Each structure stands twice: as C-alpha cells, then as structure tokens.
Image (cartoon, rainbow, N blue to C red):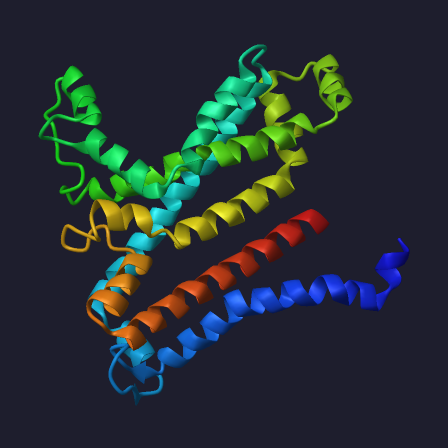
Length: 290
C-alpha cells in the first residue's frame, strides 16, 4: 500500500500509459478535427472552409439515411447480443455436463475475423445456389428471397452478422456475473417458495444490474462503430438501404477523396459514442444511488 501513496512511483506507471493513450487516441482525433475544417482530397493543397462540412452534413440525404440506418442497426445488434447472450448464460446455470464445451462453441466466432464471418453469412443468404436460410424457408413452403438485395431484409441481414458473432462474449460476461451471486440468497428465495422465473427476475437480474449496464455500453459503442460486416456484404447497398455512418465515412474519405468531409463524419461518430456512453453511465449511476 505504500507505493499507492508515493506520487513519483504512481507517475512511473501512469505517465507512459497516458502518453501512449494520447498518441493513439487524442492525436488522431485532433488531426481529424483539423481535417474536418478543410476542403481537401488528401493529396492537393487544402482549403480552409470552417464548419461548412458539418453544415453540409445535415443537408445530405444519404447521411441522414445512414444515421437512421445506424440507429436501427444498433438496436438490432445490441438486442441480439445481450438477449441471446443472457439467455444462454442462464441456461448454462442449469447445465450439469458439457458447460465448457458449449462456452467454447459460442465464444469461437468472436475470435474469428469479421470478414470470414461475413462470407459465411453470405453463403447462408445466397439464392443461387440456394443458401441455408432459403432452404429453411423452402421447407415451410416459402419462396427463396435475396436477403442482401431486398430493401426490407438487407439491414437486418447485415446486422445479424455482428449480432451473432459476439454473443459468446456477453454469454461469458453474464455467466460469470450470475455465477458470482451468493447461493444462500437463492436458496433462501427457494425456501420462501420463489419459482425459477421469480428467482431470475427478482434476485438474479437485480444482483447483476451493473454488469448488464456495462455490457449494454460495450455493445452499443461496438455497434455504433460497426463497419466490416456491412462493407463486406453490401457496401451500403442496395440504394443506401444498408448504409451506416462508418461505411459512408469510408466512401467519402477514401473513395470520393473528400477527406475533410469524411473526417467530419468520423467526428460525428466519435461525438455520438461519447455522448451516449456519458448519458448511459449517468443513468446507471443514478439507478445505483436510488
């Protein structure tokens, strides 16, 4: 404990990490802020235009579509990851054998590159040759559909890739939290006549409320920064129906060579992430105090 009271010793540990964090995070953010004030293609001479890129954003139809799609994308990804992860974690509590095997099977997708997972889902969505999902539809007498070309299905189909991939991470987080609940509390509730559903809703979920809140923040920010799956599967198509902020930023910055405009979109994404995390954290703190 003496080392915690020694400011020089603390500085030895903190300063290198702080410098590295500044170099990796704050310097690129400062550069993006500077670029967002320019009309620049990344090669020629930049022209300072102030806040014109940000003003232009809110009159950009595709940007507004991407923002709407991003909200829907986040809702689908977060719901899939947290609900499915929690459901599997609860089931593992009642499993007597093979628990480690099931945890491994669910966790493996999270360590595989997103591009590989996206290509796997592309084959599942395929209509020619008929993919797995269309074969399931045909078993029930439904016609095959082009999941990645249909306006109504393309965004859920793309969101399902990231949602499914990281279920295993949240399963492990929830399972660890549920396993740490003192058994005497659960046994006391059972003696008082609580059913398993009441035990879940009134004992287990309230006990891991902070873990659920943290998982929500992690999942939310991860979905807000989603990029690889939609870019690999559809590149924002068809007709911008699967366009999200990250893919639109990439296209503007590196395909259209509008680096200043792309940097403005990147800053919007970063600002939204920070604001959402702060609001969610404050809500969680208020809930904990109450």
